[in-house]
Amino acid sequence: MPIKNNNKSAAAASRTPEAESALKELFIDEIKDIYWAEKHLATALPKLIKGATSEDLKQTITTHLEETKNHVTRLESVFESIGEKATAKKCLAMEGLLNEATELLSDTDKGTEVRDVAIISAAQKVEHYEIASYGTLRTLAGTLGYNEAQSLLDETLAEEKKADSLLTGVAENYVNEAAAAETE
Ligand SMILES: [Fe+2]
Ligand SMILES: [Fe+2]
Image (cartoon, rainbow, N blue to C red; front, side, top):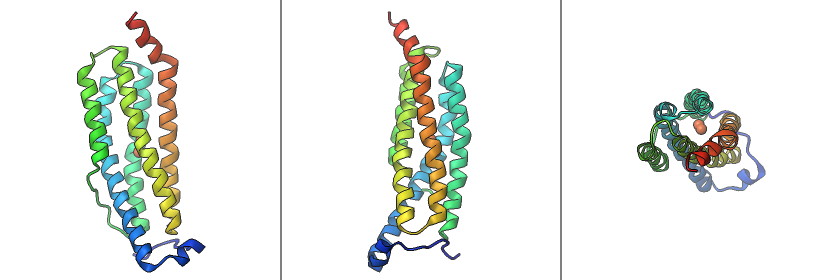
C-alpha cells in the first residue's frame, strides 16, 4: 500500500535517506508500543471501574474505557495510513503502571475514598504516559509527512488530555475532601 500524504517539509527534504529511515523506524516502533499499551489498558480499566466507589469516578473511567477501545482501532488506522501491518510490541512502561494500579487496589480497602484517590492517581499516571507518547508521535508523524496519521494521533491526544482533566476534576471536587474527612 502506498504511503499517503507524504508532504515533505524543508527539514525533511534536507534529511539523508538513512536519517529519514531511522526516524520512520522509530515512529513505527513507538506506534507498536502504544498499540500494546492501549490494548492492555482496555483490559485493565474494568478492574479500576469495579474497584471504584464514587459514581463520578466510575463514570469517568467507563467513558474513557470506550475511548480507549477507540484508540486501539484508531491506531490500526494509523498503521494502515502508512502501509504497515498493525503489530503490538510489549510496552514495559504501561505494564509497570498497570502493575502498580493492581498493587494499589490490593493495598486499599474496598468502599473507601482512599481507594478512589489511589485509583485516580494510577489512572492519571497512565494518562500522562499516553499524553507524552501521543505528543511525541503526532510531532514525529508531522516531521515524516504522515499527515493522515498526524490528525488521527491528534484526535487521541485531545481525548487523553480531556480524560486527565476530568480525573483532576473528580479528585478536586469530591474524593480528596472525603478522604481527608475519613482520616480525621
Ligand atoms: Fe488512550
Ligand atoms: Fe487514556
